[in-house]
Length: 209
Image (cartoon, rainbow, N blue to C red; front, side):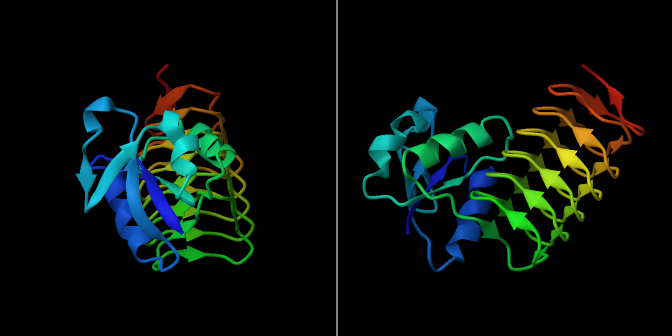
């Protein structure tokens, strides 16, 4: 599949995606998509920016698939939905060192990075991102566009809302619900539900805003 990467920061998540996708024989990386005009001529590992997100319908001609190459949660689900509406496939990327249990469900566009664990009956929504060394335990749910930072632990039956962000090294205890677009700070211990769009941090986690 002729594949585009959405995002072009040479020092950001795009580099990780390009490396991971390069190991997939079915994917032929052919270009980048970026919304910032100053990046119009940017190149990463030989891949050039071909257009912006507003041009997805036009870019679909001659291209089959799209990978999200940015690590932020906000916009992941929405861009994935626009890409699918334009006719792009959203490939699932799973690093060879990751463990994903057979009963786990991975929706289109999910990215599971190195040395991660995804447990039995876990459900990962469209374009969710599980970063290096993270654990998503049994029956946990990541809604569309959720981003799980490096070495995060999402315990059994916990739920992380649409486009929420869990910072590096945080722990979400069993049955805890994280609302849509909420942000959990790095290293936090979350024992209670977090409402949508709220920021928490600390041990135990406390509301910041």
